[in-house]
Length: 281
Image 1 (cartoon, rainbow, N blue to C red):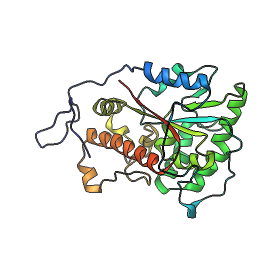
Image 2: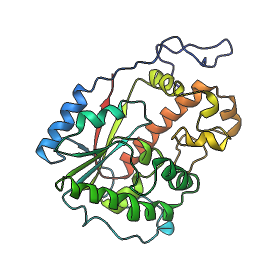
Image 3: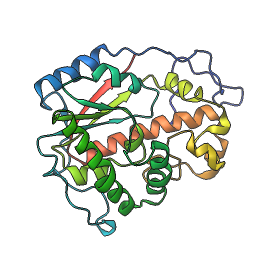
């Protein structure tokens, strides 16, 4: 699961050290993604996105037995493109808000609702959904809170045709299949952003002390790091508890990056939608 790359050092017992020698990069090269996305927005179409071909269009990816019958929103967003980021954060997504902002698109970094804060949305909706596969909760929140907010903001922005959420939170907690079900594959699109794996793990570690990591048992720490846990239902690389307990901090963040990539590949394989993949330098 963990590949050794240049810049990663090992301790005497064979495990990764918590602090490999190379420091994380602090600057992001946004020229290529900016050029691609701005060209897309100028044309007002999704022609520069790739298209996953391994699933029927508009197929719901959630378990049918768990569906909550929220109204379909496909008609309400017809002719629109709602673009979400598939990442872990620390990939330059905040910079995307300023780079991509303009008349061509409505750009939002991480507002999840006009009614509650992002922290409340994460704790009261995204985390319970991820922990229990509570599809009813997810669909209700999206259909009654988040998507109406997006619709009203698009209307207020001269009826903009493109909404771009540069924050990683919704898809990090497994919301992509539910968004696809409600919006359809013609409206939903995703941008997969990657950085050098080692550098990104270091950057995530630099967010704060280990006590604030998302897998801490301290409930308050769960509010500080908006990443999934290895026990969440949508996780693909699920380590056994004894294995997880042997991981040091650096290895746990490498696991997060590897699992994110595994979930992305699974989403592309099972669903048809437009996407753009960007490698950050």
